[in-house]
Image (cartoon, rainbow, N blue to C red):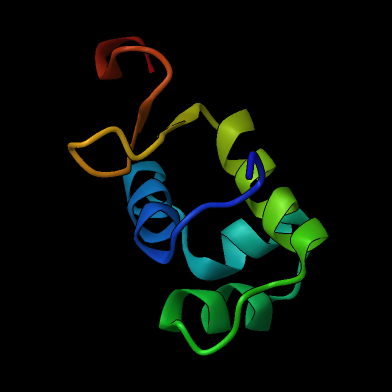
Length: 83
């Protein structure tokens, strides 16, 4: 699923950007509760909200790495020295 991201990927991407949960929610145009509940693992957002979260993180320079035998992850689209 192209829009799917894990809780760990979301938290890691947000940490890499230095964003609060509120900042991610604002960038994705979703409620802060949506982000908080997702990161706590208490609720999976609707597909459109999850897609919006992923898209906001990608626009900020995050690349999502799929499960490839070494585990799913995140990285910056460009070297950190360029950011």
